[in-house]
Image 1 (spheres, rainbow, N blue to C red):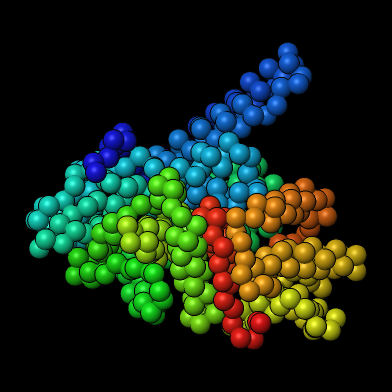
Image 2 (cartoon, rainbow, N blue to C red):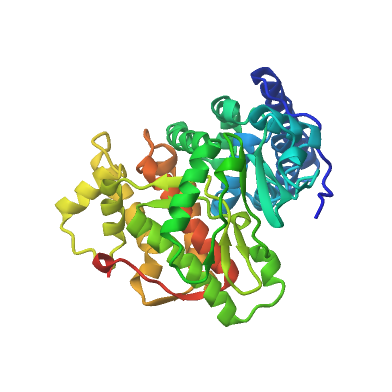
Length: 439
């Protein structure tokens, strides 16, 4: 179980140290471009493949050392598979599982700060090396009174550097995401709010208990118990959930029936949260799910929860209805409410953006329009990627003077694309339950 990855002895925590790291990475990326263009003079047919690979490696290595918000943004970008060159997707996906962990003395320091004791004084056993390291914290395994526990420890300085890190990551995001500045700022404001919440481990424990309690009746789901007496602002102790991540589980060649069962549990979990609880586990990346030997799905991380405002919910899901029996005035009202169009738009822009968002939402709504949906259908995902490409390369979109879409849509879209991606990996064919009013 002990980690084989090289451990980090220190972490840059001051704004100056972190800014210096970004600047040196920016210089490396600039150097990679220079090298690329020099080689292209000699070989004009050369593609950008090598450039992307070099840049992705340099950016990922630097963000891995910095931890925190910047690494989290890389992880989020890797989930939106249609917005990044493949080299970045492949590299940034590692942020979901395998950032270099911090060394043990730094872990002890965190325990001393919040409990006044070392881990050995609290638990019967505690692994000196992390068994898992991600963007905001790392996990150690402990045993107490014969019970196996997962102990999540937040990296030092992460909470204090969210805002400044996001400012520093902005130039990289602009270049990689192909967004206009207004859109990116709109995106970053919502990301910042969510990341600040993610560093609040007291809030995470509270939400974990609340949502897991409210979803405990759903078939084939398993949630850990959380221990408040062994948790603090920067440490969470919960039950250890045995099992495999989705990718490892698929390597065991499960049957179609098993894949459908896990997929159904995933769909039912999100259905209940979105339509009944009006708040949702908005970080559906593979690292947050564990499949147990009895084919039950363990949910292990409630750091990122999006509360869904009622007016946004009504507008968003009314557009997913199969037959849009909504008159033009009502439709315009919904589009204004969801900030897809505004009074600043010309008549031409209004028509253009309404059509784009209709296409996007009807595509996203496809699984809701049928009783069962086969997520193994790659042609469906191809349509999603093509639409993403069309939007990101469209001049009208790039030149838009404003951000498009309510900020609330960022995490809801991301949640649905994330679930669809997981269901596609599982090749699951499932019953797409939906609320009565949406049928």
